[in-house]
Amino acid sequence: MPLKLGKSFNRKYSLRIPILDGFYNIGIFFDRKSTFLLFEVEPDFSTSEELKRNVKINMFKNLESSRFCETFIQLHNYRNNNLDICNQFEKILSDYTHDISFLTNESIILSKIEINEKELFDTLNIYALTINSHNEEYVFIITERHNISKRLNRKIVRTSGLQIATTPALQMLDDYYNEKKTAGKNIIYKGNPENVITFSDAEEEAI
Image 1 (cartoon, helix red, strand yellow):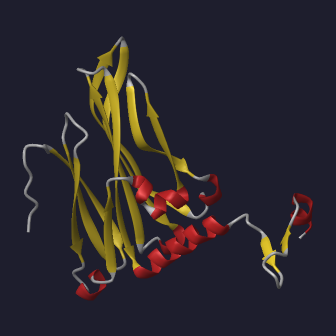
Image 2 (image 1 turned 90 degrees about the horizontal axis):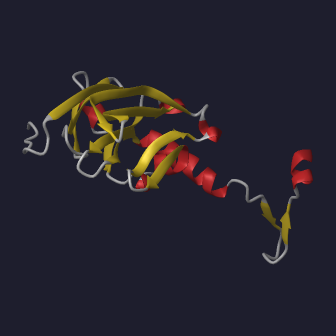
């Protein structure tokens, strides 16, 4: 069934993402004059409908609630009189640059606006990332609206996320998440839990 939109959305950007032996056609609906944004997701598994049932889709209005972003991504938040930035994509965390890759990194410039003799760009930024070990089974799409409010003399940045993944890919994500939560504790319990052995930095280097 086609997605019915009201007057809040007047632009659309389309992506076609391969998953398993099929594709997902993704429509990103947004408004030229605001940060409103909405996803449309249409599967295309012409060779096997069974594959489609093995894929899970999640949408995130708050990227901080995403396990993928919490594990792998550094987000940027900032607010002053001229900037209102919430969960802007900054970078892949350095510990995971060999585990995570970009599928696409695109920027669509909608307009150029001058405020206080400065040129600002109203844009839609799209980042599609994957877990390298499951690159045909996982994608996380971050959409980032940079909207310039001339009335407020302010740049407003808002983000949303879309996750498409198989069960094995989600299990791998959980493994990364749990490893990150437990990394660096280096504690060994022997017998009585009160007897705790911890390694010094010098001892760790010698191991």
